[in-house]
Image 1 (cartoon, one colour):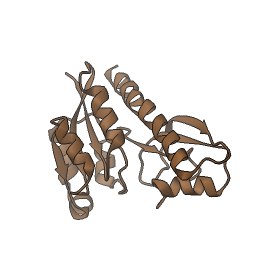
Image 2: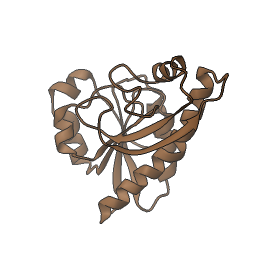
Image 3: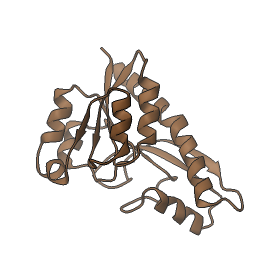
Length: 192
């Protein structure tokens, strides 16, 4: 039986795309479902291109009902992957999937994390602070934004003159390179 991955995304879904590509012909695992809190998210189109089912939900369903944990359980999901997902994960989902929900953050946590720190805001803060390096953090999800146990970090240098766009590009390269592999490693560990 292949391990089954569910991906949550709120926007374009470039990381989701890389993960779908990585596991398209994979023996170990498959992407079983893409979920979004945004009915206009481009990630839903990406999922359709891969013929992967999608599910759109609203804040009420996410926070006030058991719709999402029950859906994931029914679909036998093994690992929940957040890829540019902007909502805080509720308790009922954390309880149903202990240590089976992971996120990627576009900076070296614990720096530049927390509520409101996502996307360009993170890169802008790094730039404003004059940092010489930044990177990505893949971590387990808990009840606080960006505070779960770190699984993996990768770094890149910030050269003098690097703009927001350059920093963003360097970070995304690392995300796309490492996130699918880290997911694969976690799923391999689950097998034993």
